[in-house]
Length: 169
Image (tube, rainbow, N blue to C red):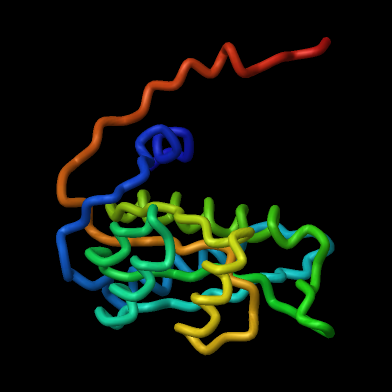
């Protein structure tokens, strides 16, 4: 699939074929795509926590009023910022770096006929702390990436991009 075609066809999927887990190969290639994202100073300040356990998926779906779809996903990847001394992220640009990793994973999912949806946790401290407790992690959870087989096909998006572009010559 051509890159621009993949970008055009990628949609936020919130309805999954319930309970069909991702294969190890699907999960691995998506995680690899995230790990290959660019990052400031090459620090790769992320940590990915892959969740396949149905009970944990259900619990993750309750961390945000917008995360209900995580319950029926085939897997979730919690994208976190690695932390150092004092619990601070190891990079000042961790949000941009993690966002690039998330987009890589969403595009890779689309390229292998899976769907995904990005659900934010950070900067809502109650969601961040609840996720840390649930998963037993010290890193800083930024987002939940729900992944799975779409329950139905969605048409490619049509976005009038010209209104959002300015070219200075």
